[in-house]
Image (cartoon, rainbow, N blue to C red; front, top):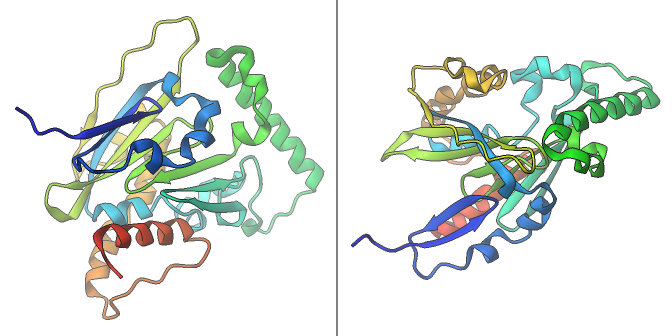
Length: 275
């Protein structure tokens, strides 16, 4: 007889809690389902699933994906169309938090300041292209979404380790401990994609495992995201080692740009009984 556990579902995902006295999943999620309701995650299928061993603790690994100001140094190629810390908004909502980055825009950190009317036209054109891409799966429903919903980036996270991107991004991250080794973790990258209404749901993609010594480009199904994640993860082993050599026992987070990370650690300390 297997040990029983509490379960709950949201957006096609199953959540498991071994605590028989835990609160209902609906209460833990808070306002998150309300923010995602329009995008019908439950009507998506798993197009891609890659898991990789990273040489850093799971908390360090996920922190690399919880702020946007690193883009200027880590992903300089992305500066051509915005997506950096200068065009970000951060919000926290109970057990989850959100970051929004303005798409189809030029980063002011490049020293380029186009005419605002030109920026509006660029965003409008980008949004129309995005809607046409969505139309294959959503039909005329694609016309009901505003420009921000189809071209801006919403990278959100639910405590402690679940990162479903918002709106119509297909990205979902999950970060897990690697057994009982505090110096390693497992990063999972999943694409959740809508399929045309009236057609049979495509089969879910199997998980593709990558070892610590294999980089993301060995998973061609990831497309261009593989090289971006290689950039993100390059310095994580060095950060892991650096934290162990610190004399000061504290890590200091910025009040706003690292607000999501600060919020995570406040929740984490509350759960483990820290001060």
